[in-house]
Image (cartoon, rainbow, N blue to C red; front, side, top):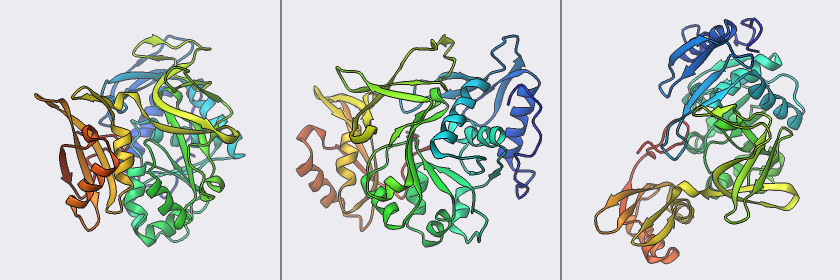
Length: 371
């Protein structure tokens, strides 16, 4: 991939030649083919490229902060990203992989769609996911699409968008927790969801639930892909991951070939090797001496009939140290009833002290909090 000349065959002919993501992707792979390592930042810009004298390179660096807000550089090369492609192909018994890409390319979720096409002889069409709200005819057939729950939340209530999504071979969904309410809406609309778990360090997906299992009502992120393994740390159920697609280093710290990466994610494995992600350790705060899981509070609030979506954050407070702030997207917004529900379903100190009703959650394109 990086070590040989790449033709333009991966570019879907329906692309607008002036599309910014298309131009960005072409520039990145032109530089990699010139044996130059490339650094991409959060603004979808190449901030540096330089000649590589390491036999494992050239390298592609992603700047990521995940949900923790601590920025770090993740280093990948041809071998790590190719391993992720091969694992996905084997798991789904695929030949070529063609995608409609509406995710930013400075994220692995977007870039891997290009890598899959280049590696497998597929094609990529770049577009704005809002276009799914329009009738697309038969164009999506035979293609895959990757979405995050925030995008899916905005699409699932629109009949035209759902009709378009059903035309794709499948919808790779990841990047954030999928609420049970949104999952049920997707099942009711018979959407071909492949719910996955992964991270920048592993070139994306390391586990996946196939659409057949999703539509049956199964919950979780499915089984490990062939190139990866997951296990739990005994004392706290934090997930450890090992993958052939593992990054070479994080912030210039080498990741050993046979080492397991400790993630901030908490989960469990249940029947038949299927995995479930319950939350993140970096989303646990202390307020008034109480340990509070923001993920758990979100889970409880999202079960309320008036709450379509929610995001819980914390802010500094002189009296409590930290207090919870709940951002709510609500139908028939009745904040008093939502607060009353929270008081019944949560311990006293876990009830948010600040409530904000909004039209859309303050999150990025990848479903990460922007506040």
